[in-house]
Image (cartoon, rainbow, N blue to C red; front, side, top):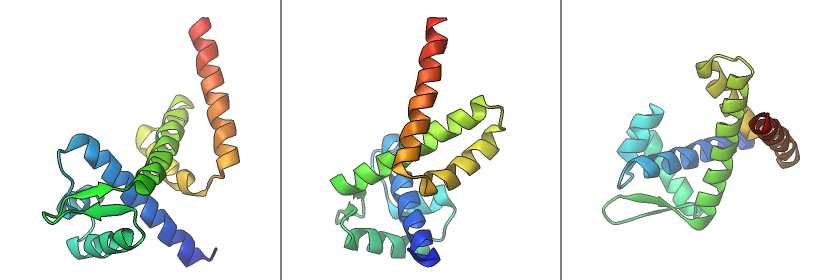
Length: 133
């Protein structure tokens, strides 16, 4: 995968993750909500939504409400799980929360499934051990 393709996939994942997060906070998600949350221009978000719709990752109602398709939701939840777990892990290691969140955002896109599962198992094992002590 080329650098440009990789960055494009990161962007897709970031948009889907944002839609997922917003859908948990708001009754309906609109492009303006995404633009505000991500601090992007409305035209940039509009182009991104068109691309996500073309890839069947989102659906947009006639009223402009955005929802994740099943495929979009699965991808968003995978990215969000990575982001959450990595952020929490870095904070537990003593990293400043803001830095931890920024670093987790970078890591969530690049880590392999195998490596993430190993880190997750290790973290959950450590947490489980802590509960029994």
